[in-house]
Length: 307
Image (tube, rainbow, N blue to C red):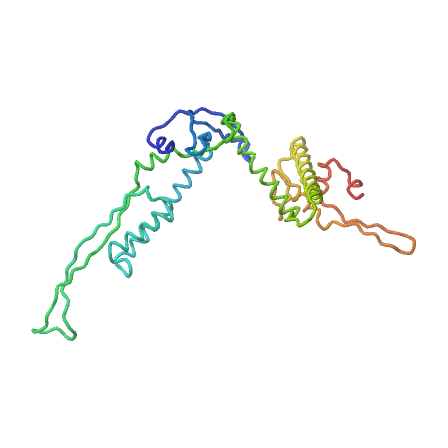
């Protein structure tokens, strides 16, 4: 209901947060909240209607791409009219509707399918026509497709570009707090991903609850250590004005390197102990400049690394 109201008439909003766009330090994104007390029909939860300046750009760009793809499809369809399975109005309109549905632009076009009647004489029977040859009149319909953008609907849609709702079960939480919690969500979900994929947590079939609690505690410690290492690396990068580290395959850079990717850079590094009689010789793989830089960022020396 609120979204439909906003399509028809613009409403007042107030800026609640500004931030530098991640990986684009020269650009600012701002978020606004629409005034009013908005609630869900069921359970009466509070809804914060948020506007994002960056989402507005994305919405407009995505819609324009969809419109152009639909126009391209219509142009292709026009060239196929009056052939094969596109000889009657029903089949043509079905194809038009399929395009609108597929591109998600159902209400954004005015579609006009015109038909022109055409009559011609056709010989009855076969053979070379003569004085006694009979002809019949055949009527044929020729269809042509025209389409234009629905300017009114597109103008209304611009009023809701950048809009998204945030539902809060906490009646005391203000819009900015709900937004910040929402923006933190991917980081929290990242920890669950690390828990399942990096540490390979799986269903446990221990009979005693104490054993389940024990192994879950070990997973918790592992996640904590992982988070601490990431925090240490990112803080040191900021202190040393290091924008990114090439920790991804093919030396692709990461602005916020994860512990897993940092450890991957040391995969295969080995130390060898060769015993010859009573003597033991130690050989170490040579570290790359990136590996030395990471060790330095972590506040370690090469000697400490090899311990």
